Amino acid sequence: MPTLNRRSLIRAGFLSAAVLGAAPLLGACSGSLERPKVQDSEVGTASAVLRPIAERFGLDEGLDLEYIAGTGPGDVQNKLLSGALDVSSFGPIGAAVSAGADADVVLFSPGLNNHVRWLVAENSSYRTPQDLRGKAIATPPNNSDAYRSAQLAAAVNGTDFEADHTIHQGAVLNGLALFERGDVEAIVTIEPNATRLVAQGARQIATVDELWRQGSGQSEPLVLNAQGALRSWVEENREAATAIDDLRREVHRHIHDEPQLLAELHESYGIGADEPDAIALLPERLLDTYPLEWGETTFANFQAQLDKAVELGIIDSPPEQELFVDLGADR
Image 1: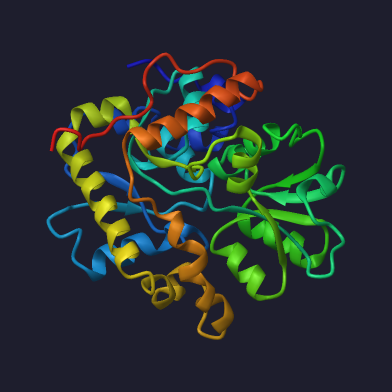
Image 2 (image 1 turned 180 degrees about the vertical axis):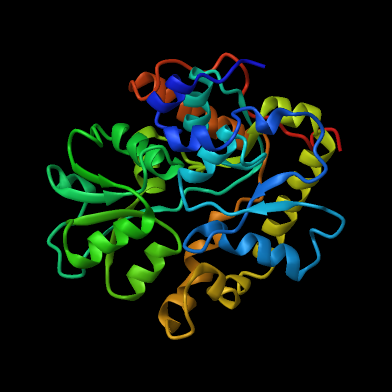
């Protein structure tokens, strides 16, 4: 496989020098692994309920997975590229950027549909993202799938996300603090944090999915990310990758069969029992975040994102190798 170049990865916005020094870059490519290192559920993210649902229904029985926590969007991608994770969330643009830095990431299993929202304070005069040009906004880290999708959705509507706003990017909790203090005019954030803010009175003025469809002419929901791994890991550990793929699909099926699970597991999201309004909104607002489809429709969605990202100068060129694979195609 290609050698990962430290300088190019830092320049691409993925890895800090501290991360690179903490783990061998090719740690995830050392051959067959007894315990795949996978992304753990993270409080404050839409993935927070995935492990609890798997464990509640015994979906992970027989799988010996090593769960490793991240600190939110952007961090888990760093962990995969550094070798601390074998499998993590990864979006198509992030995978293309990593390919340009000689890190061969392949997307092999369902992730999440886009759940990035634009919110303003209840008494704000702003009604659309366009109204916020030149204003301060809080966003997730700029190497996260959430940030990249917001940038793309702005670009297809003629807005340069970074030039047309004063962006305060960083960890999700930092963005929430800035918004709640009134230090920014708006926040671009992920679920379930957006639902908590709406329940507290904030106004949602747009979603990245809506903006993408409006500007691109696409009709399908915008897919945020998938489960990704280095291609060599998938090739050398196909049985484990297929089992992880099956697990994720089953978890999503259970969510769609019982949407109320999302409310029942509110504490996994980090939403306390003293927030009944937010709890009540979870099934309605988050159900469509967990896709059932993985195959040609999703791949076409990813390809449309990559094509637009190249056209609009967000990435220089598409990756040479196909970024997505369906491990269940032959089953």
